[in-house]
Structures are given as structure tokens and as C-alpha cells.
Image 1 (tube, rainbow, N blue to C red):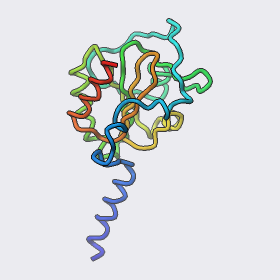
Image 2 (image 1 turned 120 degrees about the vertical axis):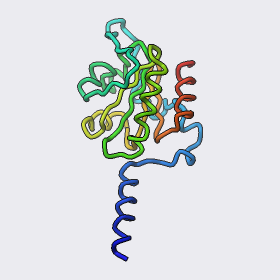
Image 3 (image 1 turned 120 degrees about the horizontal axis):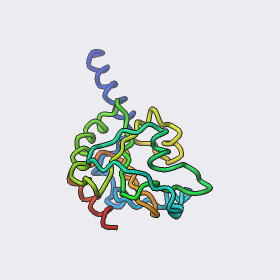
Image 4 (image 1 turned 90 degrees about the vertical axis):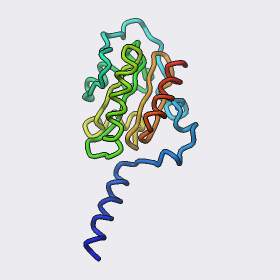
Length: 176
């Protein structure tokens, strides 16, 4: 009996650690990239024309450190607001190596990065190595996809979407 109980407990703990909600339990509104209420303390600052930097439009997912996030994506300053530093829309995939749903999402984000090459940049940020950023952005469950465009409120998608769901959300995000 104890032999069977240990694997079950390990599975339950692993699923709980990921903080993953079942996608079918979420309403479509929660999945959309409109999260202004969640980030009202991080209002988008207007582009001053000096923040743009050379962007990697290679069509590959780009792994970032916390420092690179602050250099390439955004400073975290509640007084000034959240200002996306790029000109090309981006998605930041908050993940962890130990998270099963995050590992399942990785090849999907790679395909989306290649498909939307030149139109969208996909970054990934390991939550275990960027805890301060996650705390400032209220990222408490993973995988979490953070959608950013210049001069707009960021959006958030929590959970591991299917490829079709992610593609639909990306298309809507790019059309806004």
C-alpha cells in the first residue's frame, strides 16, 4: 500500500508546485491578453524615443536573465510605470525547468516564434532566477505568458495553452 501512495503523493506535489490551472476551467476572458486591472500600478509610460534598442527578429525564442529582461524588455518602476523598451510586440514566457506544463509549452513557443518571425519576439525567463521581477509583475503561477507592446497595458495568459489557443491569442494580440 505504501509503495503506491508515494508516487501518488509525488504527482500531487508536482502538480501543485506548478500552480497550473486546468485550461478548460478558465473562462475565455481570463485567457485573453487584457489584464489592465492586474497591472494598474504599472501603467505604460509614453515612448520617449530613446528607449528603442536593436531587437533580435531571428524567429527564435530568446532566453533572458533578470538583467537582460531589465535591459531589453522593461524596467520595473511603479512610479514611472511599465515601459516596454522594444518596438516589436513581444511575449515573455515565465517558466521553470522543473515545471511539466512549462516543458510542454516550450516547443509550441518555438514554433510560434518561427511562424511570427519579424512580427513578434518571444522571450523566456526562468522564474527561479528572476524572483524579484516575478514578484513585481505578480507572476505567481507558471507557465505564464506576458504580452507586451509599446504604449499599451500588458496582458497575461496563465497556464499552458494548446498550440491553436496560443496562435489565436497571438493573432488577436497583433491585431490590437
